[in-house]
Image (cartoon, rainbow, N blue to C red):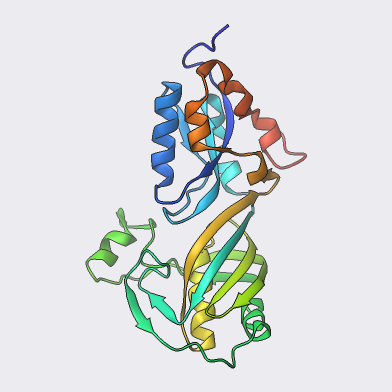
Length: 243
């Protein structure tokens, strides 16, 4: 029997492709399911790929709880370049030579200084709102406005490989952490600059990218088979949590 319209409920794990916003994904899921009650639990920048938690039906009530879960990322930094958005999508504002003297050990040493509890100032190119206006709208006009630093915790920030000028890394952190800011700050400490060129969210607490479906496969699936992708809310929450 075909799934009744507007009768879907649960947590949907989508492997977000690069080049589109998280809201684009939500809109495409809404169109596929033919229902409006669809949301998300934490956005990814257009550049980023990976785990995007989509909430369907009554599961939208879990938004704040799922959004608060710790996140895991893998990414690539290009040293020697600095952009105004701290990533490859922005305008390059500084280019420097990457000294041959920079080693993997030196990069890891600087990354390790960002492990622990700290306050991070949101970058100007972000969706954080100041008096109702997203920061990126000010940034596009070349304006910089005061931002309130936010508490974050970085549990692990590790360099996986180094092939100058590119470094692949791993981050385990709390919600609200700007990975491109961590990348930018390491580049500044090394004196050559750095920007994020690739980012992939691989996990959010007990939810893994390995259990996600690509957006294309989801859209191509018959409505009668969609329920197999939906995780009950109690399973999506941290182990031991109660709905």
